[in-house]
Image (cartoon, rainbow, N blue to C red):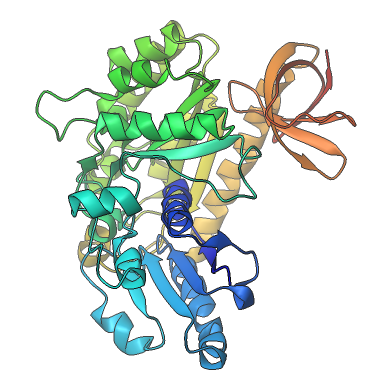
Length: 439
């Protein structure tokens, strides 16, 4: 009888990519994907703990599979990701005795070792790991996704060593580790052969790629190599850090037609004192200068940012500095979050969470309202224009795709558009999406 696996994924794009690699390893072992956990022989739960709500959701989800385990003792349950972290899972083992395997983020090794009775122990086991974990070989998509997955995420640097005071990632994912160039390019080639048209290179700080390798290539050089992979139409990368976004990277985006002019560049806060307390390493003016430099070199580029409101000690005046930066720079996207206490961060250990939840929400809504106005105005410029869209999926009667600048576009047609790169004329714009007709 064919063995099946089910994967539940929560959190960031890195988790999505990690789940894809676990799935590929299981496909190599002869398993096939099922959307129904009750039909699975192996269940993988890939977890996130960036906020307490995500951690609570993960615990709730894994607890819901306890009854399945009781009905089927042979069922293998694998808990993976940031809930487990890189420092082991002793507390979780006592709390969740029905879980068979605990895996750190980005490491299919413990699960594959369990299923192969110890033949593969970790990603450091060269020969067997490369055979099962696909470090430099073909990455296999599930049968249901082959020829249908248009865009895929490819990790290029794991972990993070920057240690912003609000961030739990370094303690959960470990220090910064860049993947070998050959492994990355081989993975992109294998995805292209399976019909993927767009890849997004991932890292907690993606523009630090290669900095942990003496004389290794940097992100700009990696982009130039991937640009040569046949079949890949678009290349994106995220998330960048203002301190490491150099002119060579700007040049690569400007010069390489398949590298999309969309940049994820978090500022996190607009006040210099708050930025120091966050340990970000730049000033508001530094960020403004970088945005100006990018726009001068890549005039049609879209820029997204991340912002945390209500960081410990943030005053009303300091918050208004953030508001002023958003109002002045008019960025295309602002991912907003309210500060939350996370065990293991410097901010939690050393700073008082002294901004009330009500005030955090008020500030959040102010930025949300401002950004909605800003983006609506930006998107109006597309009205009547012809843009190229890569179509990804059909949502009800409309095909959904994205422009080079990562704007969502819907086209209503009976034609099959999945994976096609087509010019469209924009007929309606809003702050969060646009509508168009095929040209």
